[in-house]
Amino acid sequence: MASSAAPSLPHIRLLATGGTIAGAQTTGGRGYQAGKFSIDALVAAVPQLATLARLDVEQVAAIGSQDMSEAVWLKLAARTQAALDTPDIAGAVITHGTDTMEETAFFLNLVVRAEKPVVLVGAMRPATAISADGPMNLYNAIAVAGRPAARGRGVLVVANDEIHFAREIAKTDTTQVGTFNSGHRGLAGLVNAGRLHLYAPPVRRHTAQSEFSLDGVAALPRVDIVYAHAGMGRELIDATVRAGARGLVIAGVGDGNLGAVPLAAAAEAAKAGVAVVRSSRTGGGVVERNIEVDDDKFGFIAADELNPQKARVLLMLGLTRTREVRALQEMFFAY
Ligand code: GLU
Image (tube, rainbow, N blue to C red):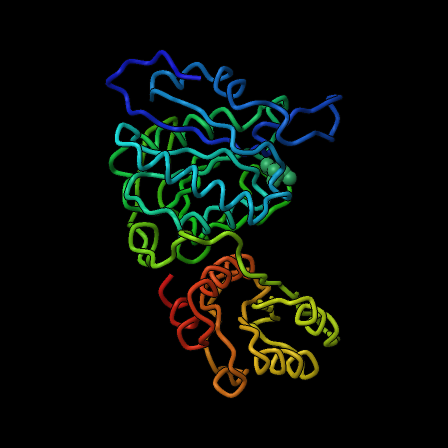
């Protein structure tokens, strides 16, 4: 669908993947189906979008983001890059479910080569809910993507009048509209009914400065996440190694810690050539090297500030370039 907005407005490509923003409630009750509405229907529901941008739309997928996969990421990255490489297009907006929004945003942040804004947007309430949050989120996302001031800040996420950096954002609540939080480093800015207030740019490498490329990458290496807990055994770590994982992210307790039994299993995995990253299940803070775990001795990688699901994304991409532990560790300090 092409919009009838004035030609002087920025041209934005809207790439749809599904999610609750396109979700329909069937009975007025609590249940709903994600990805039910087409992107054309979502755009038609917000006629004010025509005052912000000339839109064209592309449906890349129609899934709840719990079904997001590496295959869809590869396709989405290619379609996003194609949009940004089109001279007339000022930026891209991607509709997406909120469950795995942070992973997709961080993946694109590492593989898309462009200064132009890329903005992911979702909603916590289905399109048919009372006080649905999707329409204003979509309006704000398109406002951000069309503004030259939003260029060069990496991939952004817009929700609940907030602008988040892909690297910092995490979903922190199962149902609340204010689910997204950007932790210690904080927000990229605010957007109030399309009016932008941008804060400091990100400090880590992203998009145009990223070393990662999907050229010739048909599939990503298998990286699993294992969640640590009191009384943990070694079975799940051994199982991921047996299943052929090339990388393993530990959602460690506290500062990325593991009890003695799973620690021995992780050390054996690292010795066998599996890249082992220690992240934390706490949801905040830094996992530094060699604090309670001797990373040098065991050949582990510290996740620095990345939560387990984002550490997995970086490790998958890192493993497309190297298996060398020291080089992989440097990536966790750089991105
Ligand atoms: N499971 C849905 C999804 O991620 C719900 C989350 C949402 O979109 O808000 O697509």
